[in-house]
Length: 497
Ligand code: PHE
Image 1 (cartoon, helix red, strand yellow):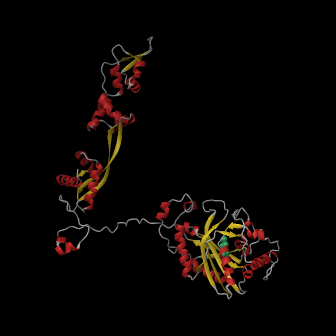
Image 2 (cartoon, rainbow, N blue to C red; image 1 turned 135 degrees about the horizontal axis):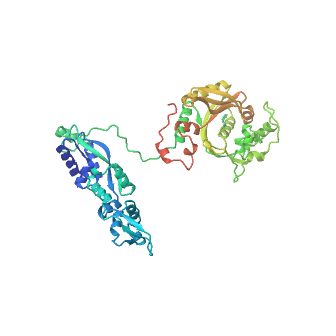
Image 3 (cartoon, rainbow, N blue to C red; image 1 turned 180 degrees about the horizontal axis):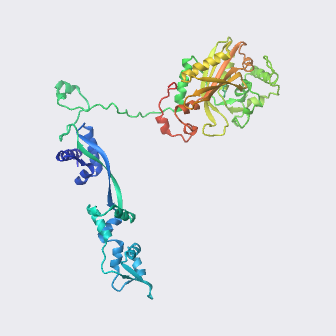
């Protein structure tokens, strides 16, 4: 049946009755699928207030396949009874009947039949009564015909237990007249055209109201991972503060730039296999600025530049070992060395946001790789006060205003401070980063002029991303278990709100 046909039939029916009609009843009487009527209801609803449709659900009893067979041919027990002749039937024969097993026990408990064991060929079954009343069949027929008033709930549940009946829930619409009810369907215009205006035909037309709640079609395009969205925001903050981005496009670094240039002694536990990933091929780097390397060697093994050094036997072999960089401070070291080579010193503000690698035990908040955000400022006469001031400025742009600093230790900074911020949600101070003033043992061998200090800080990108997007397990953010839908659905990032 054509769709508009169903629409009109529904409207005519509602017009004819006082109350309303049920969509299931309409479907049954038209012999169409209920979905067809539901579709018609939806179309009518979209035409304005012609009809009102209220969803409702009702339950009713239906015969199962076995129930239908029982209604037709009688219950298993009645069929067993009917199969027993005057002279009785061997129990073994009776059991072979299709209704045998169930029918036998039911007929026994109804006291319709009895078993006589005193026979040579085995037990025999006899009728005990002349006539039976197959009430099971009777009830099922009543339910089938829709005149089940005599069958009470207990009996229905009994039949349900015997798998002859099931209770089904039917969802339908109760359809009534709407405020602008009419049996004539006028198609509503979706758009006012220039032609309607010039001809004046718009006066006769009815217009579809605008749906200002409608969502736009989802764009078929790529989606940025939350980490990349948060990175964009951090990058924006640094750029607003006048920082320049450092080139971080080398995951592989030599131990020299990752550790030695940062005055990190060669026996330091962080340089162990357990903390750092070493490369087997190529296992070593050999291309270092020779005079600078000599000065690094000297400051470690003998001291100099006003320092006593560590006084140990510094080995080039240790510095040559290639690793996956463990922090982006290796990049900062390269950049500061380059800055020192340019002749006349100029103040700089650098930042980087990129990936680093550590041989960590994996858990809900740690992976063997993560991203670091790092800021570096070099100028004459910078103090710890400048560092604290710039950190306040930086974190305020993130929406974090309550900061506390705790003395800490890094081989390359003195003094060093861990940065804590007050987490309003957790109601406690949480560590958000690490910072410090780079040591003269690091800067002077590079050729950075005396009197210049370099302040720096670092934090992870994952921590603020997980907080921002409400992700508790880092494996839901990074790795093969990431749900792409999470990536599609994650909104743009605003750090300060
Ligand atoms: N490199 C440090 C880390 O990996 C962070 C840091 C950067 C500390 C700069 C001080 C100065 O945790």
